[in-house]
Image (cartoon, rainbow, N blue to C red):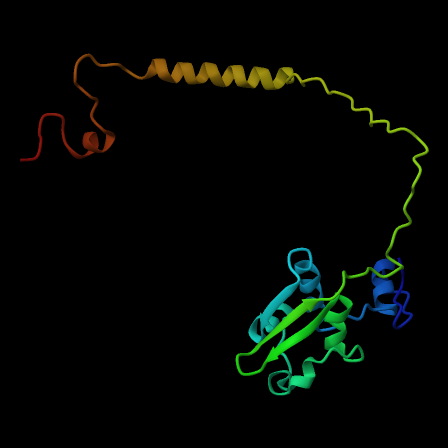
Length: 189
């Protein structure tokens, strides 16, 4: 826990993870969703045809009006934020049809991960693989209290079954509501 980073107020404490996010917030482009989608599709195909409405759904926002009106908006210029998203994913916009409202992206290269995220590979194995020791647990026996409660419950159920009277033949005992409504000698006509 650390004092509030923005105000320096020691009465408001923040966890270190929250403080890191406040000091150096991660900037996310509106078009990162499109880049992620194209990276995903790169393992299946080399060309992707996306309608403008589908792109709106992928980025979670509407495209600007220039995207619907001007073909140059779809140019593969790395200085544009929107073009940077698909160029970093390894794709280029090849065909733009403003009348029908779709774009065809073509895979140029495989997407490269930033060098800071790459893990160094180990070529040599120094130790042999040893599996983790797993201790097999014994089946737990129930406590004497639980056993005695279950036994008492079973005996009570048996007593209830034996206390219910049995009648020979087709006769059934009268339901309680019938006993209350009518006298034993009279029945309604």
